[in-house]
Image 1: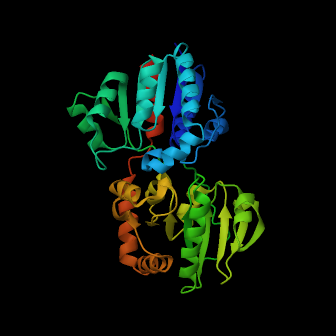
Image 2: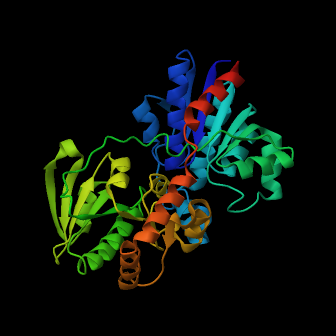
Amino acid sequence: MRNLLLVSNGHAEDLTAAAIGEEIKKISPSISLRALPLVGLGQAYDRKGIENLGLRKVFPSGGFAKEGPRYLVKDVKAGLFSSLIQQIKIIISEGKQTGLIVAVGDIFLAALCGFFSRKPIIYIDGPNSVRIRKYYPIERWILKKFCRKVIVQDKETAEYLKSDNIPGEYLGTWVMDYVPLTGEDFGIESHKTIIGILPGTREEAYDNLQLIFSVVDAMARQNKEIVGLVAFALDREKLKNMLSWKYDEYNALEKGITAKVTSPSGTTFYLAEGRFGDVCKASKLIIGLAGIANEQAVGFGTPVVAFPGKGPQTTLRRWKEIHHITGDSMAVLTGSTEEVSSKTLEILKDPARLKSMRQIGLDSKKDRGAIPRIARFILEYLK
């Protein structure tokens, strides 16, 4: 059966699955592809022309209900269980007509597809690594029972799974494969110090962006050459209505810049849309409250600073987890706005530390090109 279902549960997971789907279609156009994003809108599939079976509903936790009971309660009130029942019905229905499921996300996804599709699963485990923690017994049971192959993000995890007779496979890092670069410099003067800003893509990102604005503004009061450059993937009108600072639509669309924000003290922030990779490359340092995007930023060789923000994706616990992947290419800071800005300026003024952070980041994501390998692996399995 040449039908294939992509299932994912997160923004970065959607991007990964959509990139794999696009590569599969390039190699084998006759494959019938459909996708089921369990969290959010699944716009990554829409952009790749892959049929999107998702409910297109965004929950308050943004898919991070596991970060605490209050987030789970909010999701339940927003209709979590009724949506889950609808998604299970879709998985059951698709299981009758698909030959293989490719699941990209956390272990819950593998269990859901395994219990209800009754079809072979290739599971791509992006969130977990033995660098963060070892798999729980129930997780190992799920992987053994349902997954024909478990593709993981590092060699250590693959070896760990194989030692327990779980078919782990490492094919390289995929998180850099779907980030395009255009070489754009955004027209910012060369003498300026660009601080990249990654606020995230979920609802909490609006509040977190304003937190980062405050930190960068405090830095700029001590260093007038600092400008902020935001990798922006939110609703501009909504941000405009939330801000008390000066907001101007910016006529530089050919450079990806769509707006300029100016603080009362005169600090300038540019919003750049559709240029995430270029923002990373143009920045001397990045302040990121954005999960996987922080891993990608250090992969470009750009030092990253993170601190606890608002919402379940930006807890101190989660930054400590991600730090196991990024190493010291990402500095996790705590404290008030003034304290975080002061600590960030210290990093910015330390050439040796910046150099070390850059190299650690580059080394963390050096084995690239996994998307084509995964696509070929899936097609071989279908044969």
